[in-house]
Image 1 (cartoon, rainbow, N blue to C red):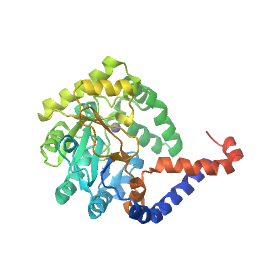
Image 2: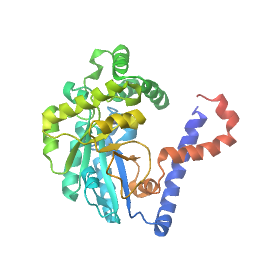
Image 3: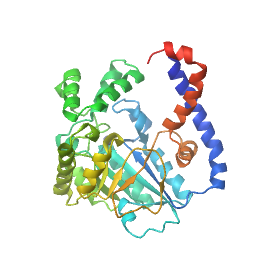
Image 4: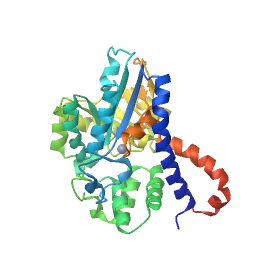
Length: 342
Ligand SMILES: [Zn+2]
């Protein structure tokens, strides 16, 4: 039987899409989004839905190339301008509405975005995890996802296993992966789950529409580290990217969006100008570029942008909206919920 919280999740998802579709035109007609910057983060791209069904990467965070194309088209039609991080350091006309595209992690499949960026003449930032590229290692969350899916483990249990590891440093996570799935488990299965090669990062960096950013050396969840370790994670990653591409990144995306005050201090002292969190929200313009600019980001998702994009633009994310709806539903089903799985 489907657990009650999974049922509630499904209902909430349905409601969210319907509401987004209804409220978007209404609210935007009352209040436009001028003088605001919306930043979205993407992870992997699929060539087709068939690739998704192979279960080589965790599908929750990924979308098809065609959905990505629709995403860009949607914002261009609404007169948003796509910008790159550096534009925030220059004179930007802050009366307009802006969007920024960011890709986290450094999947090879991100190369599929390039023809779309070229077609629409828009930039995107690619945050590269050095260690995975250097060692051609699959990302640990995908290793868990693909092996557990093969074993028939439920989506919820897979999610819990991934979340449980997020309080640790990379060496602990890496030992866990080797112990549970074997030393060979980090070998990618296909072009769907593999990271970029060294050569591909060079090619990407040469593309006029691509900006290269730091995502730490080991995809380090930075609040789990000491100060000197944080410094090393970001410096080593920038050294790696500089020696490979000749470019020194001035932007960093915190892995999993995790940061704290110490992380911000270290990043600013290291010379970074723009940091990207995963706190959902719009960014008001102008930004104060005399200090480190910390930008909020909305998560992308694989739903129909024409329904779902509306929600992002209203400052909601699936997470925040679902939890609100879930809270109210939970009040009704409290008894059942408490006896269900937690
Ligand atoms: Zn990441």
